[in-house]
Length: 171
Image (cartoon, rainbow, N blue to C red):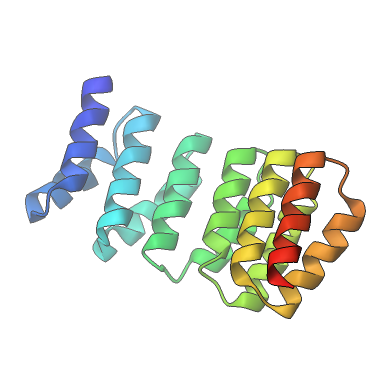
């Protein structure tokens, strides 16, 4: 399987139509890591024709595949990103939730902040840390207010430090 992953990654670096076809075929692999790598490669390459196939991976049973599909759709600026973000933020798996947060940054600032607010309230510190980083990238009055509210409720020292540092830089 490592050789197949390497092959998919190599195809992702090629700039030929044949590579796109092979990557699209890899979306049907029985191995989740192959499906995930193929989706990521197609997304990075900007292959908009693959959007329907990648969108179908959102229904996969493997969180690694769902996360990769979300990242790819966000890179492709697919129309379905907003709905996909909402689904991801309700998913049981933290990696899928984080992919939803990353995808949210491609939405309007107001919509992104609504999604990211769910991240700063998440039970896992690493999810709150990612949400904090993404909120700081927006750099608006709304993002600063969201972080001030999050800071008031944050117990984890690392996340508190990230929020405080970000607020000081933006002040």
